[in-house]
Length: 303
Length: 319
Image 1 (cartoon, rainbow over the protein chains, first blue to last red):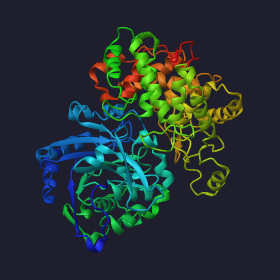
Image 2 (cartoon, rainbow over the protein chains, first blue to last red; image 1 turned 90 degrees about the vertical axis):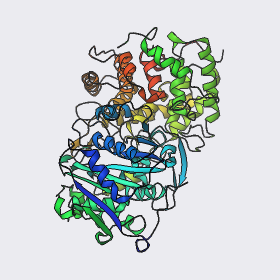
Image 3 (tube, helix red, strand yellow; image 1 turned 180 degrees about the horizontal axis):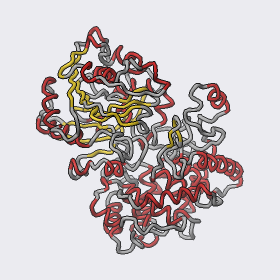
Image 4 (spheres, rainbow over the protein chains, first blue to last red; image 1 turned 45 degrees about the vertical axis):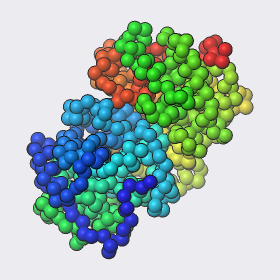
């Protein structure tokens, strides 16, 4: 079974709403800010099970590779305040199979308390075979975690980063983390062989998150997703259309979303790419625009 | 670090956890109550076969685990990672290693067909055609690795990576059949070269990309431990010493039970120690290890006799 009805052409899809909030540091009242930012979307999560899917890639000694634990904990607090019956946090790190070591390195336990019944290692979760509704890649189907596919509401909480193979990694690329390492390895190399851009499309068509938050308070530029430099961008970006959220993030990064291969294709069926179909709430892109450094292979993305 | 399993916190915490979580089909899941998976079953089988703590009931558990592995083997000799999957993958190496380690005389043909599958499973990135295409690619200098060396991928038809290559090397360590010996020797030689080629500058391994876009990759504990275990019988080279030095330096900061246990096994196997390492028992007491079966099994093995890394002993579960 797929998550959500995802394949809708842009002309049938109502305009999307994206909220951009300026946040100077992780010491601000992040929970209050997230709670206020979720309000315009009228999310119906009362009594529902929610899974927050952060971007936890690997050990993060300097604190700008992974979604910051403050943002994860604040989002969890907000969805509980909104009446969710259960708010789990789950990811399947791509490069290191010692997930607990990664959680230790980002001090997630300090922010969330005991993790046993809160955190789900999606690399080792129970799996179900999911057939893709799209044929962007040659994958056709993948095993995906039952927890991810079974909860009522999924929130992709990505990090604002450049990516040395895909150009950018935001809320859509973040879904590579749901592909179970126990089936496909560390890294999940089958996705690279299928074509990263195409695999992003197939996975998002089958397992579209219900909501997206991008942690751009401190992002990464250059040789991301792990070897780049930190980029203090001072934003959190929110929306219920992951394509629109990622397109907006690109604009915030000073990049052209229509030149990011997977986003350009996602704009045809998965969500809105065009700025005139995205209603900005909070800050306008121009007010928070940055100039992210990219590798030479991605110079064509620069606006 | 605990000096042995007997009466240790590791035994008190991990052994009951493992003994109580075997599924009716004989296997273990990655967490209690989850469906049996080949990888989890292999590690628990090894942990419960640890001579110093084995109960008579454990022999029954191991028997049932062995039967689970036998029934999940695919026709081509491989094992799948997920229940119902019909394509085998890297866990085949782990299965062969585990079944060999318990010295089960009844498993000869099971292991033999697994080893044959491993010998015939070539990665796709280093085929002559792929290498030709790679030479023409504008991306050829992005991640400079020697693609004439060939190891194993996580799944068939993909690229060589450090961890599956290490497990295959360990599985092919003790190939008995004459038919496979020559092929295994060739594969081992190529794969050993691959591991040395993929080492991070300065020692240690990550998943398998030592340098990307000119930036040196950071090594990680888990792939470093598996690589060094796979190379434990190789001729000592500076790369091994360098990597052991890295692991030893890093060990003092390791706080997760999974990495800590693998570090302990690896350093001990290479005759080293790190007195500054955290106590595995203490770490386990303050961590819930996410109820991870693999971690519990590795912790037991970290305090054990390393029987699974040595020659098979005379004991047999078939007796």
